[in-house]
Image (cartoon, rainbow, N blue to C red; front, side, top):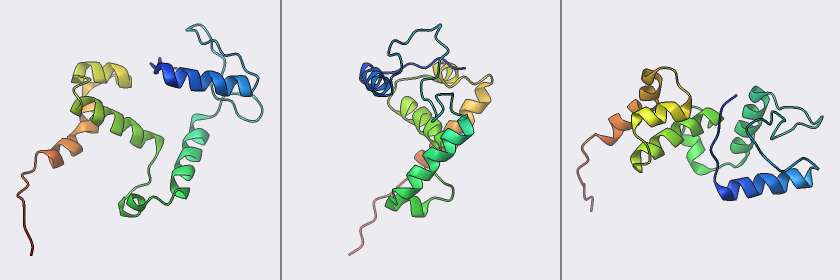
Length: 129
């Protein structure tokens, strides 16, 4: 289980969802009850939840999806979070490792490496008339 920091707005949304489903709406560190429940009221299997998210994204038919080599998955969002946190100056590498729960800093570097290679390429403005 991972500790997760959420915004006040997201917390309010989770509480509203919980109220609609008849779940308790007070979150605390000692609580091990499911935050998102399946139809039986049990924990979601993480693989099932990830697959459902991937399927929902595919169904959006967003234009950029046709240019991707791989589908957008929950793991894609971890990579995006890491890149955005570093680019916006919200995290240094050490804190990013901690936030992502990686045991090895090399794992976190992999998240950033491909993006940084592309970002460091020189781009010249080309005018085509």
